[in-house]
Image (cartoon, rainbow, N blue to C red; front, side, top):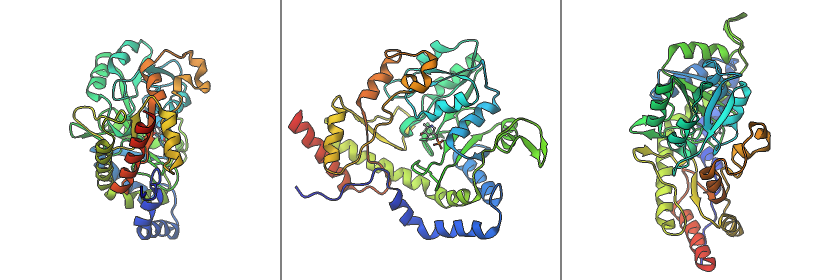
Length: 371
Ligand SMILES: *Cc1c(COP(=O)(O)O)cnc(C)c1O
């Protein structure tokens, strides 16, 4: 069989080559401007990203983790408060909850590997302050159900949209459903910068005003500190480079959806495929299949130079760092079952049909030889 070269997992160097002159020009312009923190680039990026998300306001910050922590701080979540989230997520979702001193409470996931609203409902207590769903892999969680639950109990909603820039449910974007929506611009995200970065979007002016202070030592103007804040800011250079990339985001997401379509075709019947919940526009930050022979398949693909990853191999409730929460194996059956079977295949906008065909053939070989 003739094989074309295996694709890289997330295609970052392809993306850089395609934008190199513009990115380098934008970075140089900032270097030469003499203004590096909280300037014009950040202001403009915040305006543009708020418009993109369909929200009134955006406050950028230093990472996705801190975007979530700032959102929780803005809502006054802290010691004694509980935040309902999921364990099937990147640990930083939960790091942010710990950072503010609140207690994470984990709801199990549904068939889309997103927060199961029925389970979340069973976890609401008088200490619950916030519901924090994660739009995992690039599709929006059941926000209609989550917002209804929040309304019923007077809770606030913070979305972890770090994997879902541009994803939609019923035409409404990720980040535009809750009180606050949080994003990461870590390089591999659907919209990523060249280092760390993050943002919070909202329609609420009170929260916007507070977030502007919280990310900048709590100051209203220089040396006038109204609240206890931190230092969490997006650099001018990163903002300038994000402004180069933002106009390409929709087209990149479309390309990811096209790649996902090729995968769906090639892999039908060979393994469990990711599925879009009804009404969702999935932006495939990751293309995650399921198979009971996950580790064998991963080694098989690695033999042919195809890199795969597991997002995530240990759910947060079973991580050593969170042992103090008192969870044990068996507490979240759907999450724990998924974690044994999930495998992320290479996925990025520059992938070709030949590359997907190659991976499809390798998975078919595996199913044929060993199935
Ligand atoms: C990337 C990510 C984060 C954290 O973002 P950082 O910018 O790396 O701090 C949080 N939640 C999810 C689901 C993520 O994928």
